[in-house]
Image 1: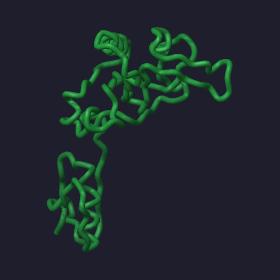
Image 2: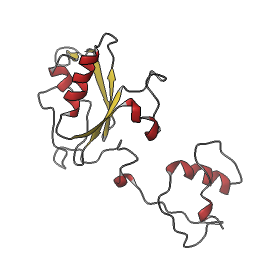
Image 3: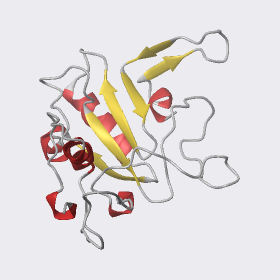
Image 4: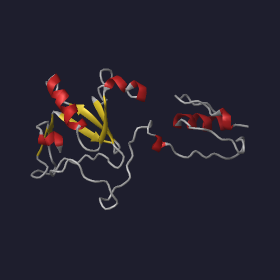
Length: 178
């Protein structure tokens, strides 16, 4: 909505089925994060700064992540991967992003009444994204306790228990093995 209001996105959603879009900047929502693509190669450095300032100034946006931080989050650099966003928005607790661009409300509450209080797409660095990891069975130590488990380690561990190896970024969680 904000991009549309500031001339970075044009749509005729209300008058055409299917709707058409002309985007100088576009957002793809993942719920707790939103990937922002600057799609117009003629976008000036000042216009880029304006998009960052507009979106970063919204109530409910807690952080704007620039490409210099992508590597620490395990994300590709947009200069090397054209499919990667130019920057990422992070929603504050109690907020989420949507792909809607109609209407006038830039921010709508995320409540039970709004129909979608739960959202995916939060950053893995958010401690609230830590899930319970429970494993039991043959060759698993009884009562073994771990701190935080990297999700990438689960598949290699299962493969190891099955007598297989798996080329993956993760490692076998040996602390739980007998």
